[in-house]
Image (cartoon, rainbow, N blue to C red; front, top):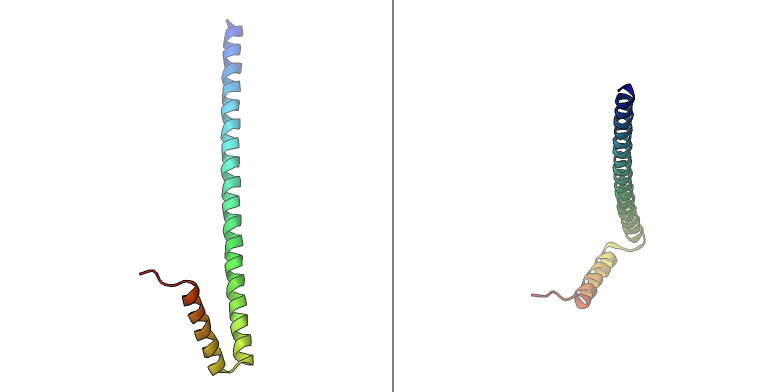
Length: 90
């Protein structure tokens, strides 16, 4: 009688431990997935900020080395070229 009770207690304990281990594995996977998403977002944010810094630095160099009218002309030429390369589809 006690052997059966002890056996059931041990089985229940083992089931509970297995369930606990599975839950810990699920939580671990969820944590790792969240960490990866956060890492990828941080990388994207850094890339975006870097691109903004590069553009700002380029603008500053252009304005320092090229007169305002020359910069305006270069901008208009670039826009014209983009319009030729990628015409609007109406």
